[in-house]
Length: 79
Figure (cartoon, helix red, strand yellow):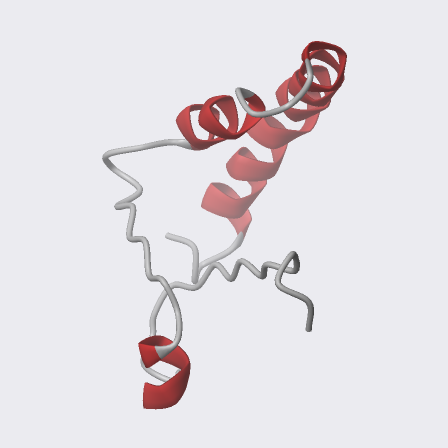
C-alpha cells in the first residue's frame, strides 16, 4: 500500500486482534462516556475546506443522531 493510504478501525474490544496488528497500529481509545461523535467529527472537519466541511457537517447532523439512537436502542453489543 502507498504511504498515503490510512485505515481506521473501530472496535469494542481488542480481544481477537493479533499481537502484531496491535503492535503495528496506533491505538487511540475514547470512552463513550467522555467524548461523543460531534467532538470527533468537529475536529476532523477542521482539516477540510470550508465548503466541504459545511456539506459534511449537514450530512452528519442529519444522519448521525438517528444512527446513534438506533445503536443504543436496538443493538445489544453497542450498549
